[in-house]
Length: 225
Image (cartoon, rainbow, N blue to C red; front, side):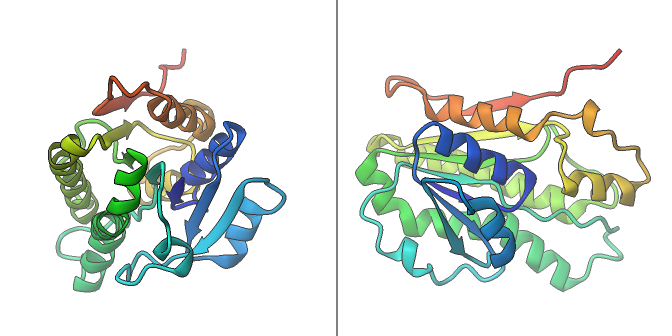
């Protein structure tokens, strides 16, 4: 299995849950030190240095794969800025990391995924998120990611490849804490979905028998009293 964004809160939780389930996990990220923290001492993991801002060339551990059971796309950036303040470079990086890299990695790994009759999971944004003031680049990238997943699902059904989009509500990560601070909104980890909970959803999706597929899954935090 390949997990992108493996140094983030959701990605790291997916790595741990997948190795606990017996998967060998290639944990991909661009920060070598943080990758070592995620993979260090965890049997069945291997770090893969991968900069999704420029995903044209696959690193060697991925280039030679003959089969691959699953790709879980967890990587994402979520800068907050108005349209007026969003520069070309911010648009380019957001679209590259959040959708173009996912498309390119999936395209390059399709032969290995087809060989394994595998599964592609896209971790998207909260359900029904769109047209958020000061977040146009992020919401546009997630809309594009949804279209990528839907097209891939239709195209690859004949090959048995399963494609699932997961739409998580607020999840207790450093990224969400940063985003809410930029919006001036409160953040309490206890009120959010825990990364381990979301990782369990990913593994449930991957554990589906081959006679069924979950195309979309929405995950919402429980209201607190």
